[in-house]
Length: 224
Length: 268
Length: 129
Picture: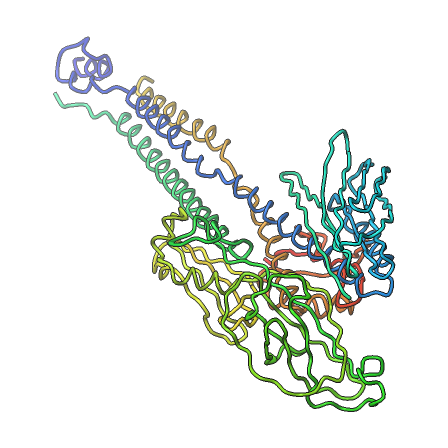
């Protein structure tokens, strides 16, 4: 009888005296305490995921690619102008080739260019504005020392050519002002007119979902 | 009375310890993998930054002890010269068309419209063989052999912000043909002056000034001659993570010649 | 019956830990997809190099796609496959797989010596394995 009582009172704790009391201090709650400590440690370790902050790295990679594309386009525009200088009719060649090349790249870039051909023999120069900015622009074109100025609109994917008289002293200051979506931009160029010359100004913009790169460049080549 | 053995408690504790050990093992290996991957990504990010020295110049451009940002890129220029030994190009049309052993090709650097380092001229034929030239002031002359009715292109390279010593040598011949000079093109390369300056600098100073956390090595390998042209930086570690990236580049050497190479960057 | 209470408490504790693990791992950030940007950059750098050494322009002016690919094979890493097309607007995708992740870059070549031709080299790249 006593033995049965002893077995039944194993988990009853201190209610009964006797040798069984030393086993009654064991608690199952220590498992829960240990579990809570482990969970706290795991939550603290979760902060280690901050080391994956490399979205900046991806943006750096993609903007580097835009830089490379921009270099490619700038070099090719320079090549187009250079090749025009070798043709019999440098002005027509430059106008056509620049337009065709701009058409080729327009899906990748927004572009505005000014192409000037100076004919030293006839003492006249032609300035062509090419617009691939996805919007029309209002242009004011003045050649100081030449006494001539023009105001006109260039629609998107169009070019317009204006003729100026070269100056006696061999240099013309050409001012190009354009207005697009309410914003005015002024560019000024110095054109030498004592030799045959091709001159070009490019304003190229490349954009993707994360970055925008814009660059302006000038190229000129003269010959006797 | 015999003591009672708490079998169910021991069993529960045993199972808990086994599962606890499994969780610790899983968590430890998972996070050590994350840590390892993150370390490699950091190394790669730094290696990519170093590899882009082929795309940009140093900052500031005229650094003295060490730059704040590494860079070896510069722009150089080239243009073609066409020598055409046919009617219409002969200076003296009455002479007729014949083979010429030593046709003198002349051009003036000032007429190109660029600021040119006069000693940076490098001339090559169509097969990329270097051609010697003579320089008098800013007039360049070189001699070529050309057959009747033949036309040959030569390419002339020059730099605008380098500092080479003269490699001019006397040439002789006669000028019978009017050459055609093509418009100048611009292209990108690793500039000799910048390579030399970096190679002469102190690695530890450069590393500190550029805020480069890890050790690195920059190597330019000359693929034309199959030899290392420049190796700058530390020796790579024998243990641990090393990230190596490479790309092919065009570089200038001490004699202003244009060479093909491979840029390799190691970070550890 | 009461002897199973320890076991139940242990199971509750273990379940608590596992639920926490599942919750924490559900927010595990993934690495950003850098590999495609790197492949693009590698392709562009290869084109820049072949252009810089003076070969690309001649090959494009002669519409020599095989020559372009030979030049690129020497510089593009061996774990990438690629295909090139010299084109203007309509670039065909011959030999480009449909069941792979493919990146494409356009490298423009406008002129060479005294000739304008206004073309682009479209380069497709994808991993071999």
